[in-house]
Length: 451
Image (cartoon, rainbow, N blue to C red):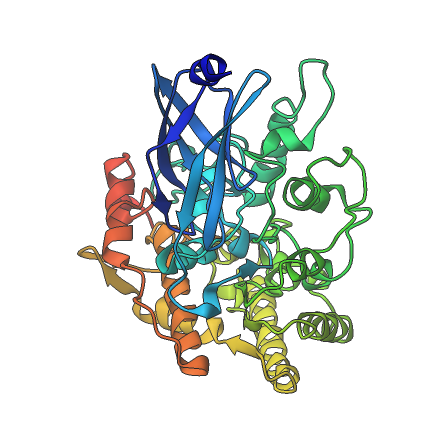
């Protein structure tokens, strides 16, 4: 028995601790070929092996010790415990996210692996060492809008978001077919078994946060990869984002786009402004009340953004510029902005009845950015097209824009709860941002020549 024990395959973890957010490499040594590694049951991705040296990227975990298991064919080998340190404050012990594309992490028209990791909630939880449970998409999955897709000066037009997303969805169907030509949503996820903390889904309206999506293929396509990766192509989604995150007994709920899609679709989706696409006020209020009621069932502190005005978006300005009657089109954009003002004011009134629910004034912050911009990494950034705060689709944020909104939420948390943490370093984030004005210029865009 001693001889068998001495010859048994082994593995030794050389990384002993890691931050709760994770997405950092861990190292171990082993004398067997490694098929996969799990930490606390979650798959470590980007596995690399060079002889006996193995690295893989840890997805994060709640504070405590987590078993690292190495799998080699039919062997399961314990490599040791990985210790995850406590978060910066108990408020961040169990952070969850709900909402739509801004909360999920969408850039340049589609959700991506990179944008998932640079969403405002991801950047915030990385900053405080908190686990976030991100349902990472495989890289690449959806094709993004790139600088090469931008039209010639002086118009420098970006592809229409809806057409690009539709084309991307068609392209990605092939990625999600297995060797037997069976369609599988789970093939779009790095780890389809991960316990999800960021349950946001691009395209969701406020009603979709509390009621299952049943007959909308477009919404369901992305929703399955986040909420139900083992579902069939046309299946209904069996769980709502609120139900999913409340199962995690959250201490903090973040939502950066509570009802943006109830409003902005009117100005960016159909190639013209269609006010009929705005959720009517009675329906919207019933949906918001249902959301507030369900979120109040937990003891979590909840921070919900109100909505910036749709007319601030470059994509909305492009709609007006392309219209046969720009004056009439602008009047409809102005009406969408006025409706947003009313909905924001009503959210303030409704949320006042829920002591643990706090409204973050994204409207005013976006207005300030629209008027003044901000300076970061020696660059003057703006909300104009290719100005460094909005990605190439003219709707979603860059890494820097998401970080700026993360800091807005940190400010709100300090104001409401007295919990203060070090803010995100915008200079460092902008320096690495592939959509900063400097980076776009280096990619070949002549921004000075664009209107």
